[in-house]
Image (tube, rainbow, N blue to C red; front, side, top):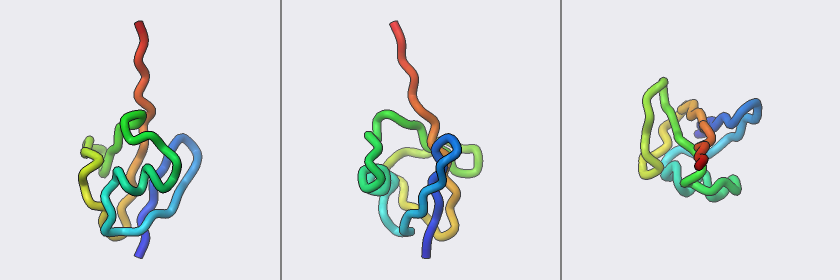
Length: 64
């Protein structure tokens, strides 16, 4: 079964059961460079991906 991760207008399919961190790494994202939301709620990268999840990735912006 799969779930999706959405970054801007790009949609990526990922397998359920792995951690968000592992999925991000497989897709080539630096886990600390994005915030992850599920159903509008912020989650950590240690969460497991659930069947039919739709996870939205928001870039972290820092400045000085």
